[in-house]
Image 1 (spheres, protein in one colour):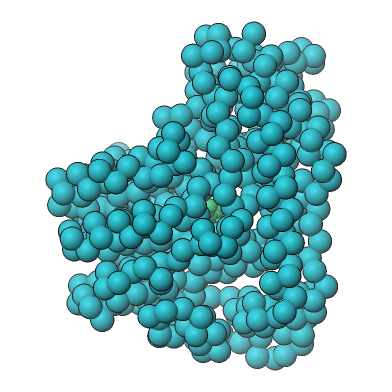
Image 2 (cartoon, protein in one colour):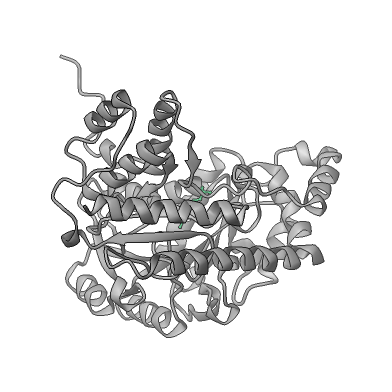
Length: 426
Ligand SMILES: Cc1ncc(COP(=O)(O)O)c(C=O)c1O
């Protein structure tokens, strides 16, 4: 008999942010108008690409050199540009990737089989899926505490590291997804100190660092890493309205201080070489875009816009004792956590169309509370949100974006959600 083609941990590869889109498209066929609140894509949400940025991209498209293979690590000019803006980083310690999954995939698959990663709970699912896939084993996590501004439980982190010799690296997502927290310098320094004392390395996913609302809250790995080996992941699809560029890079710190870490980094580069290089166009234009005087103005304007929406959302929802809402500290989502003990055992929302009601109730049989709410919300109001228990978390919660361009429309989305939560509790 033929061998089973599907490996044991294949079920760990899932991306519910996109899966709910399939369901929403099915629901559309029942004549429901969908309001997309599931994913951060400013362009899909109506944000136009600034003219100055388009001009830079068009100029690059007119040069023949934009069409060649670039070096594996990245274009020299771009690496120099980044290295000059960081402490303790040389241009040779930067590797460019096609998108962050390309980087995430390579850093997890090149890690030896029994070397494990401890990561936050809740956690951004691409990391957790990749780690489970790499280790074929249950996750090892440290908790983020919603009652303490989602700060990490450092005692738990240290205990787990101390008693599990397989843990080789600590993952920190800062600014964090899906809690929208930004961790304070002293908290991050304590994590680095744990890594130092137990000879671990750290990986900081910092793809949102330019989108922190208050500049004094912004602390990046290069500022605090000391002598600990570490990797910072950066990504251009968030602070530029260009998610389709699929363009990011990793910055490697202190490889000279640890021979084993150096060899591991070399294996990441070697596996990148098998693909020759990443896409040339986004890397060719990044230095010009980031150093344009327009960029900073544009970034600040966007932050202001998201901040206004974060405040508004919190104001509309905060007094409901059925839920908890922690005001986001960076763009561009809001999470809503259910106080499930205040809801009946089989809550529902009214759906006028009988066929749709039957369809959605069949779809949701056996689902967790937050997913059940999101499915009902979608079928009953057309609002497509993302259930968050899937982010490896035991909370029942969901997220919406802060992206809606039209403020009146945004208010009405929030009011509809508020009313749906109340109805769900009856
Ligand atoms: C923390 C974090 N890292 C990486 C990514 C990957 O970004 P993208 O979806 O643009 O590939 C995301 C996306 O939401 C994220 O939240």
